[in-house]
Image: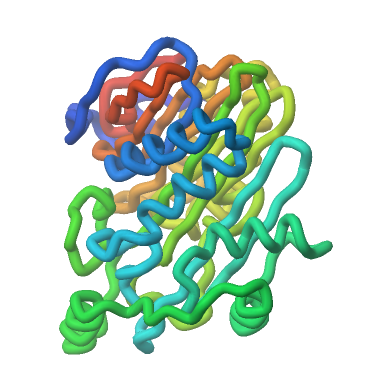
Length: 332
C-alpha cells in the first residue's frame, strides 16, 4: 500500500528532515525489551526494567513504568498534573493488555492517581474489559484506591487562561514541549520478553480542554493499544480520533501478521490515514510504535518530531526520532 511522492505532496505532506531526538543514551542491542512513546518514555522504561529485573512479570513491569508519568506533576499529558477538560475536570484513560487476550481499561476516570493500576484490576478482578466514568471511580474505590485531587495549581491556571478564548487546537508533538498549555496525549508502552511473549500498556489524561466525556483511542483495545501472541504489539500517539477511525493498532498488528516489519506496518497505517483524511490532517500528528516477537522495533508518524524510547535486555535505553511522512522515507 505505497503512496507516491506526488501523492504525498498533493496531501500537503512534502519532505522535510526528521528532528533529532532530544535525549540519547547507550545504544541498545538489536533485541528490545521495552519501548515507549516520547522522550519521557525513557524514565518509564527504566522503572519497568528495574521491576522486570527484580523478577516481575511483563505486566508488573509495565504497570510500574506507566506509573512514572502518571505521578509526574510536570507532565501535563498523563495523570497527576494533566490538563483538565473544558469544564475543569481532570479525567484519565488507561489500558493494560497481555498476549493471552487479557485486557482491562478505564475511561474518563476521575480522582484516582494511577488509572493504569485500576485498569489492571479491571482485567484481573472483573469479567469486563472497560469501565468508564463514575462506575470506574466507584470500582477503584472498592478496590482500595484513594481519592486524589488531580488538578494541580499549574494545570488550573492554564485552564483558566484557556477559558479567556476557549479555543482548542491540537499542536503536533506538544508532548515534547513540556509545560505547553496544549500538552495532550499519552504514554504507550510495549514489552517483548526473551521468550517472545508480549504485553502493553497505555495511559493518558487525554486532550487538554476536551469536551467533557471525550474518550480518545488510548483505552480502546485495537486503537490505542493492541498485542497478539506470536505476532507483536503496537501503540499509538497523537490525535486519538484519527487513530480510532482506522482501528490503528489492530491494523498495525494485522500487517505484521501478514509479514510486514514493525516499521513497514506502522508506515502503512500512517499512509492509510493520509489517504483517507487528506487535508483534514495536514497539521495533525499521529504516530505508531510497534514491536514483534523478535524484539524488532519500528515507528512512523505523520509529522516529524515523534520520539520513542527503546530499552534492550541489558537495560540500555536510547531515545530515537521516528521517521515520518514529511521526512526521509524507506520501505522496510
